[in-house]
Image (cartoon, rainbow, N blue to C red; front, side, top):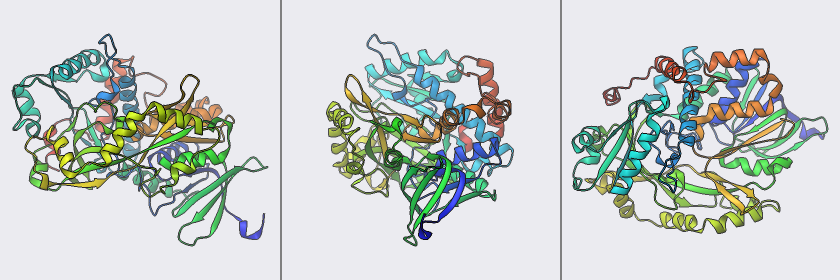
Length: 507
């Protein structure tokens, strides 16, 4: 290697991207194996600037309490509950880990990043009311959803959701479910807190302004990464035994450059997002809830409409959306050439095939991008009948890259979830996809550990430590009501959560 190509860092682990996923994996690894040296490479100037930023994601604490897209109605009228139960359990696992970190002073006080905000599903029309009633009946029998409450009573709905009900035509069938246990999570604040903890270790280095351009397996078995320092414009080099690519929309191009066989055939479909943000503090005070409705036919899951109380930097905010849009960028601060550059011989057919099978989605995204302010206000009016256009402004949310996978029958399919792609030898892993993402970050990173550290994950030492951090580890809350109840009681205390909605109104 030439003098100018001197390796800047050598470490056991390199984490690409300073978002919630890398933060979670980094903290898990330092708790499980304190001797590991870790390097983090981030292209922007600070952690949580892209998808993990509070303004770039829903922050719902996705637990399937209110998101109707996680419970699909079958042709025979029955409701699929598997995905909702899985996501609800995964979020409880995340809360257990965050409770451990907060309780053991690894991170800041919990009330800096998580708050109790009730979750509601709200629908209108006979068909949708029937669906919500069946969904309630299907979920209510499980411990994870035992506190779910259903009503069609207009007075109760007005008590629950005054802003949503005021000025509404009460002759139309209406229904809602309520889950007091819901939360709002500022994943940006949480991510930065975890990175502050990581940076307290002398053998953890976090480098900002480092845009990773290439990675390849060296003859010595290490991964060699080449990055461009955005400030100095100098090429820099890094080596590690294990690499995690958690760069959000930037993960796919880097995974392709790794040339691992497991990456073959993966593609990405980028979707942009926008919010309407309320500027009227008097209106914001009148609403304390996350209210989710049904998505339009053909729209992606991230476009499920919601009137959403957020608590960001200690202040209550009110958002509506998100409005989807068509883009070719993979990152909010990316390039319009990202999509084209991601095309390779082994993924071009799956991507074209998935595109052909999802023409209605493409048409929908383009129509969303062409909407006027008044068009967006009209959509908001379905959730807030007395809305005033001048009280709301449009803000740009984050980019999402949905996974496209090879499929023997269709050639390529578009997936609306997350996908962990790991090298067979466990030396590299990448996370692709989006929703539910951040809310289930702990379970996703446990999957990475299982794939890439299989021997250690079977050791008594790691199992004991994981059980300390995540008391339900190795057991199922879906199948054990007592375990679920105990977990929730413990995390409510550790995270200082109060189910009374009136508490949040003081923020």
